Image (cartoon, rainbow, N blue to C red; front, side, top):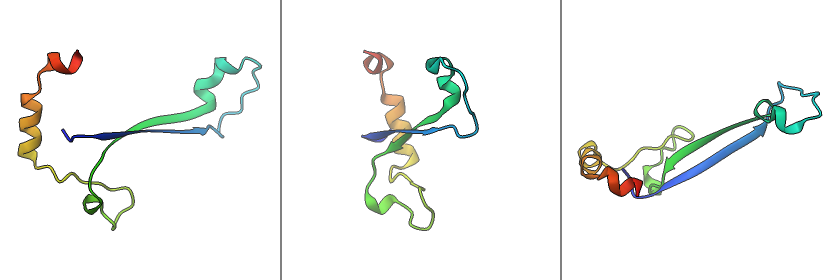
Length: 78
């Protein structure tokens, strides 16, 4: 919908899980917590300074809907 995005990977050790296994890769999904955030790249004025990490898009709903409807699925997949 917007022109560009940031793909942010957050990772941290899982301090609630203490692995005593010698096979490190066997418990990797329990040893770490990770998630991915997809954030639009927007102008500085579109960031709220009242709340931390709250963003809004200057794009209107109508423009976003038009862009989604005009997108050809074949061109996105190829």
